[in-house]
Image 1 (cartoon, rainbow, N blue to C red):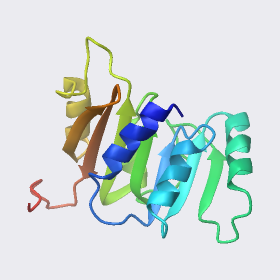
Image 2 (cartoon, rainbow, N blue to C red; image 1 turned 45 degrees about the horizontal axis):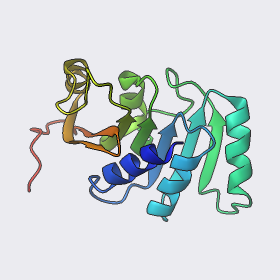
Image 3 (tube, rainbow, N blue to C red; image 1 turned 60 degrees about the vertical axis):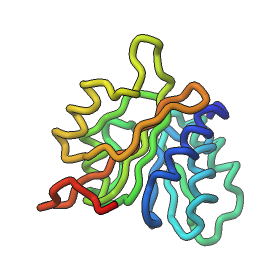
Length: 170
């Protein structure tokens, strides 16, 4: 993962309240983001999924001995994540096509999504593109923070809990 994307991921993590117990990185590549998230949340179980078997092998090799099974990687597609419904407290994705309905499926109500992308000059995330905002709202997400840092845009959104008005106390 390019270092600029890690900087944006780090900035986004600062916007996530609480301490997630189960974290998924979609499109984990060789595991840079997942390893960062594991360091950031030392009590969490972190999973990474990538469509490339080669990248997953490289990520697994980087973890080394992990007797607690805190960090694990597997092959899978962002369109059909190999995890059960309502399983994760935080889902992160850096670059790539965001499959919001699949993220919403594996994310617990009240959980957070972090999405990082390299903004194009004609389409910055700040302000948010209408398509992403509509997709997030349609699936029950509320955007809590949008920013641009080191040439990377990030969005942090929370999946609403049933009956939630969408307003969090300050």
